[in-house]
Image (cartoon, rainbow, N blue to C red; front, side, top):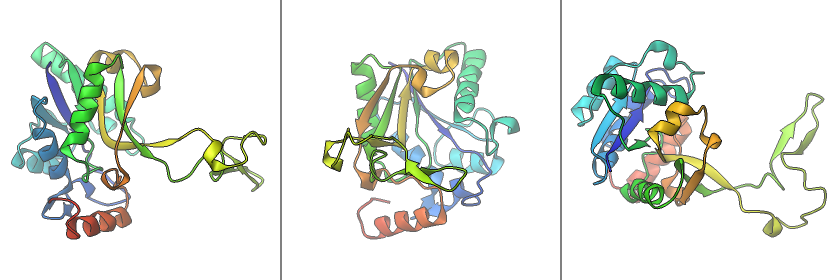
Length: 234
């Protein structure tokens, strides 16, 4: 099956300015995702979707294709990632005449993933009947016990009211965080639907130490510490 990995990396980032090309370890953040995707045997191509010429140059330097620049309106803070996915697939369909059988999104924000995590997501997608496969990791907190929302009057309430049904955390359903390790999806599903949970969703579990999602300078510091402690190969 033909599988194309896409890395969606816009130029603007409020949390960490220049995040996608900021050095982590010995290379730019985006380089981690490019190299990890290229190491997966089932992935035929690695394409970067970006609105930034600077990011495009770095991506090409590390072996990715950048066949187009993403329109500015699809690279804003409030631009849905789904729209960027659809734009990239539509570009291939219109310019190459066909879609890949599998689309793999490898976000820049999970550089501590292992190649096997991407491979496991692809294999689970191939072996199942899913529209999309996500990587998840065990959640630190439970919405049944210690996650609250704050009302306009300032009062807190549980995200999921259990009405006394559960008295111990061990009794509640297991909950997981969706990570940014990898998304493996049917391209036709992306072009025909508007969100992930409109379809059949499969999951692959990854350990917490490989699921760090870099969104702030603090996250960068944690990643640097893990790399320097030799827990991650740089």
